[in-house]
Length: 202
Image 1 (cartoon, one colour):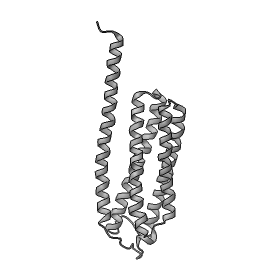
Image 2 (image 1 turned 30 degrees about the vertical axis):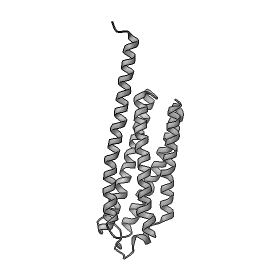
Image 3 (image 1 turned 180 degrees about the horizontal axis):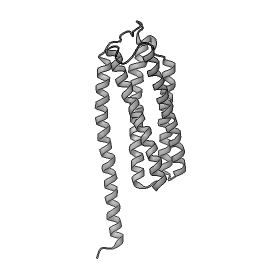
Image 4 (image 1 turned 90 degrees about the vertical axis):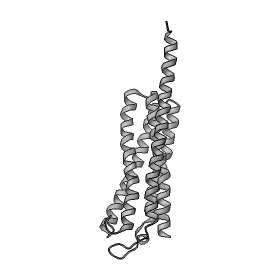
């Protein structure tokens, strides 16, 4: 007859393997996302700057100081998410909630600025349908924005999971995957900021 302690060991090993497979599978997903963004970056890089409907070049429209604030919000959200993960490893559920809420607010601040920028550009003679440059611009920056929106929704779902079952092993795995996703978006944005805005105004 199999002892209950042996069954528990087998069960723990099974769940550990399942969580490892989940994280590995998420890494595979991130690699496919890299290919998506690599394609968008390649299309944008191969499209020369073109003036808008009023004959103004993109480098004259971009407000670098404004975009730097947007970038600061996303970088700060990555830092606060790191603090949430440290709290998770310390088994401090309340701190995890607090840091995740701050992270979500910073992410929403980033999205608000991006939406404002899109509205401003569209009403200033630079809609997505104007030419190839602006089509590539909206596709690249907009795809990143959709990913941040997805991460924000995912974070809201995590609040429900954490409230329901605390820092259980499945929830720690979910939070680890979300952390990878969020930091990945941070890295992608650094490339977007450099290629689209920083080099665009030089």
